Amino acid sequence: MFGGKTEKYIQGVIAMTLLFHISSVTGNCTNTTLKLFDDQIQAIQKYVRTIVEDGSCNKKNAPVGFHAYMESTKTYEKGVVWVYDSVVTNTHNAYSATTGKFTTPEQGLYIFSIDTLSDPGKASHAGLYVDGKIRSWQVCNNGGGKSQWLTCSNSAILLLQRGETVYVADYYSTASIRELHSDFSGAKLN
Image 1 (tube, rainbow, N blue to C red):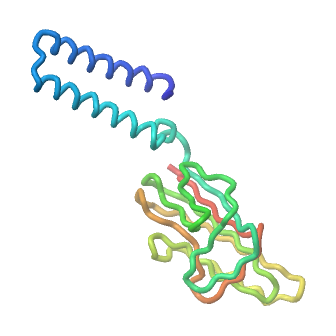
Image 2: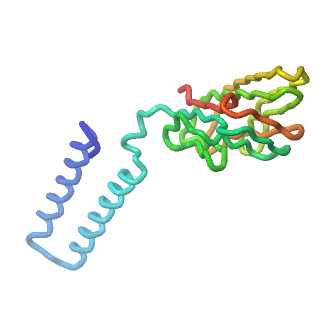
Image 3: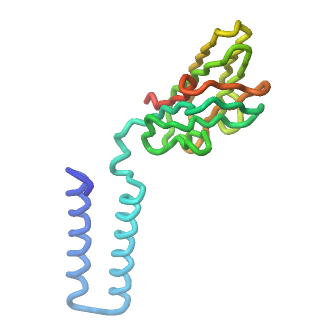
């Protein structure tokens, strides 16, 4: 289930623990000894269950990253989180296509990219926020003619702690964002 050296190590620890306790119990089966033995077996089971349920054996070496885009054209009021609802990549399930927020699964240096397409005569002011504080700004103000679309792009490199939430929202006014060509990406660099 865990693969390679990790699985053999866990099997060895469990076997040694069981052998140690079985040999100490065989001659004297007091309630205290059996209770201690039972407590330790339950602790091992809880530890293994935690590893299996959170998938940490598989995640330790997996890179952290996500990429999502907007499936349809959207309008957002100032301060409302932009939801990029079509997810292409999402390791660690750290990005939510429901909330539009990325929660850092690990401490480290991250890079984020925002691309926004504005329709003719429309504008957006994308702010990259970390736990409610703006860290990067983008202006996509398209005052062009009837058939001019404007794409704006911005990147930011941020040192983040585990559990911090990163998202995009308009910091100035109402935002109009064109589908398919507007996306949000992030990845851990180290």
